[in-house]
Structure formats: C-alpha cells, structure tokens
Length: 499
Ligand code: HEM
Ligand SMILES: *[C@@H]1O[C@H](CO)[C@@H](O)[C@H](O)[C@H]1NC(C)=O
Ligand SMILES: *[C@@H]1O[C@H](CO)[C@@H](O)[C@H](O)[C@H]1NC(C)=O
Image (cartoon, rainbow, N blue to C red; front, side, top):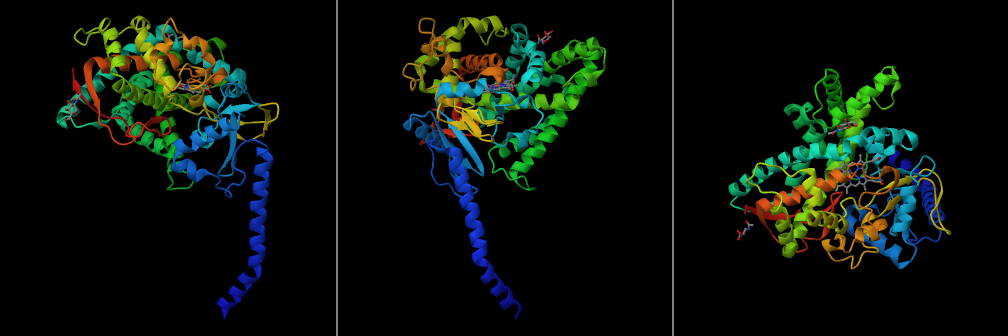
C-alpha cells in the first residue's frame, strides 16, 4: 500500500521536478552565454560540470584546444566552463600583460591554482596586493641580492652533489637500469629548498612528517576539488595546515636564534633579522609590525616552497631531456663548464663563475622558454575588467594567462630548441622580452627567478660533467603532461653512469 502511495506521489511530482531541473540548466546556460558573449568557446556546456572531465582526463589536450580556439578566432583568448566557474584562457602575450599589470584589489588577484584560495587559505603572499604586498616583498627581496645568492649557491651545490652520490649508488645497485628522473629531482629540490630556506630548524622527525604531508598536498593539486573527508583535495587542504605549522615552528626557532646573536645561516634567519630590527625600530612589539607572527611567516614560507619546488623540478627534468636529444649542445655545455669547474678540485662554482658561463645560461633560459614549467598563471577577476575593445571579463571569472603560449610568439623559429637565440649577437631575450613570461610580470613577478636560473645552471653544469646519461625511449615519452607543472610523459626515464 505504502509503496504505491509513494509511487503515485513521485509520478505526480516528477513533471515539476523535471521542469525545475530544466529551468536551472536553462538559467545556467543563459548565464554562461551572457558571460561569454561573442568570445570563442563552446556554445553549450554540461550542467554544473562544464568541461571538467576533459580537463582532468587530459589537461595537455584541454589547454591545447583552448589555445587553438583562441588562435583560430584571432581574438587571442577563449572562454569555457569548469564546475560552475566561467573561465577565460589567454593566448596572446599582450593580453596576458594586461592581466599581469592589473593585479590589484579592484582587478585581478593571483591565485596560482583554480581552487588556490581554498587550498592555501586566504592570507598568503600571493593574495596580498598594493602597499601591503610591496612592503612584504621589500622585506624578503634583500635575500635574493647577488650577495645572498652566492651564499645560497654553495648550499645548493652541496645538496646537489650529495644527491648525485645517491643517484650513482642507485644506478650501481640497480645494474644501471633506467630510473624516473623526476622523482629524484623532486627529492633533491625539496632537500635543497628546505636547506636554503630553513636550514637547521627542521630536524629529522619534522622532516619525515614534512615529506609525507607534502606528497599529500601534491596529489590534491591535481584532484577533483571536493572538500569532503576522504577526498584527495580535502587531504591536501589539511596537509597545508600541517605544513604551515611545521614551518611556523621553524620561524619561531629562527627568531630565538637570531635574537640570541647567532649569525644567520639560512634565508629565514636573514629575514627574521630584518624583521626583528624593524620591530625594535618601531619600538612597538611584534603585533604592530604587519605579517610578523610565526603563523603568518610559516604561511609565506609555504608559498615560497610551493613556488620554488615543482617549477624548478620541471625545469631540471626538461633540461636533461633536451640535452640528451641535442648532443652538440650538450658537448658545448661540457666544454664551457670544464674551463670553470672540475669535480676533482674541491672548489665549488661561485656566483661570479655562473655569470661567466654564458652558454650554459643560454641553455638554461632556452629550456625555460621552450618548456615553461608553470604554463598557466591563474588569476581571478575581482571586478569586471575590459580586456579588449569588445570584451569585458565579468567579475568572478578565472583567467588563465598562458605563459607557455607566449614563449612561442615573436621568437625566431620558436618551435626550435635553440639556445643560441640568447647569445650576445642575437639577443632575442632583449628583442622579445615581452614574450618571455616564464616568471610572470608586474607586481607579483617571481621573487626567486635569479635563484631558479642559478639552480638550473648549477644542476646542468654538475650533472653533465659528472654523468653520462641515456634516455630509455618509449612511445610518446617526450609528450607534455601536467603534474601540474609540465614534464615529459615518462617522467624522464634515464640511466646514468659516471663519466
Ligand atoms: C623554474 C623555476 C620557477 C618558475 C618557472 C617560477 C615561476 C613563477 C611565476 C610564473 C610566478 C607568478 C608571477 C606573476 O604572477 O606575475 C611566480 C611567483 C613566485 N615565485 Fe616563482 N618560479 C620559479 C622558481 C621559484 C623559486 C626557486 C622561488 C623561491 C626561492 C620562487 C618564489 C616565488 C614567489 C614567492 C612567488 C610569488 C610572488 C608574489 O606573489 O609576490 N619561485 N613564480
Ligand atoms: C638577506 O638580507 C639581509 C638584509 O638586507 C642581509 O643582511 C643579508 O646579507 C641577506 N642574506 C644573505 C644570505 O646575504
Ligand atoms: C644505459 O643502458 C644501456 C643498456 O643496458 C647501456 O648500453 C648504456 O651504456 C647505458 N648508458 C649509460 C649512460 O649508462
């Protein structure tokens, strides 16, 4: 009886339910079309999901399609719809510059990840703007001066060499079977950044906890953004909280150490030294100086680490991939390095040495141009923004300037991997500066860019001098995949042996 009753109710309300759902779907489509206007992009989108399935299944193809739509239409940008969010992909460098130049409270906000605000929390460096952001950057910037960088260069090299020893042992133990270089580089870079940033404040136990949480965070970056227990995205969010706690403890210990007069040994020490000076000068106590609490600094350190880590790993892996494919370029690099550094001497490469290594620097820059590690730099539109004469980006849109696309605009034969384009007689880096957007532009331009170029150069110099390496080629191994920075599909499967 009862079930017949329920059934008859269902039958009678179904038409209403269906019409409500269709109404919602209809409103969603109309809203999408109103935002999209005449921009190129799909006319109809799946309710709520939009094109997220394509995006998660094959990001490379999804973004290539956006670029193609943008190029074919001659607009330089294209529109789409992802899980209830209207998005705009920007292919044209000049339009991307418009976004980078307008990062401020009433225009665009850098978010670094489509669901970044949720993932990182609201209060991080990348979300600050205006004077507040300028002040904080000024406090950090001195630690990327030439002098600071040369201090870091020796820390970087000792970590690199330490890891190379490990790789060598691994190669011998495994009978010279090939390994996935990406994971080895990732560990090496995490070790290096942690040493440079917080050096002595991370003991073995916190370090292990750190590694575990950092892995979880990485998985969540590529997952469907469901913020419910058991989902990777939620776990990543929790991992961020834990990581920030660990880093806040480092900031606290650093403050104590610096206050007790111990000379600074890593980036956080130098930063805290400045901060304590500022607090003393203001004569007010720490709560008057903005962004000085341990938790805030922990948060900024996490931003640093996130920014430093994966992009850098991507550049190292592509360097090996591209050098292996280009033996003449490889031998020119070896030739140049051999005049400056020998593994037999116990001297390290100095910051001045790095500036003399013009060819190796050109190779490093070309690796970054040709395979920009962070291909997209997501921003959110805080207000309506007039992008072109005929199109205004509506408030709330997620905008993706593609710095990858910019790399293939302007430069001579951009599809060629050709380090000589940056040589002193061609100077394409000057000529096409506006299309070299690897490190972004404007107020949030990458703080660590010199450090990143140095790191890539040191790695290239030492890796090519110490090792012979051979790629284990499989079908499509060089295809670009998103992890979420880009890397070759096989994670760069190589074997190495000492030269
Ligand atoms: C190959 C390596 C790297 C690449 C390709 C890269 C790229 C970028 C890009 C595209 C941005 C956004 C810029 C913008 O919005 O205009 C950025 C921001 C940033 N990067 Fe890098 N980066 C790299 C390495 C590093 C390293 C090693 C560090 C730290 C030592 C670092 C620290 C930062 C920070 C702190 C920001 C945010 C700046 C702000 O919001 O004011 N990056 N990076
Ligand atoms: C970091 O900045 C401070 C303040 O400008 C400076 O004294 C220090 O030398 C810098 N760090 C390094 C490693 O040189
Ligand atoms: C890589 O492995 C192959 C096959 O075992 C071997 O012939 C080659 O010499 C190795 N290359 C290097 C650089 O170790």
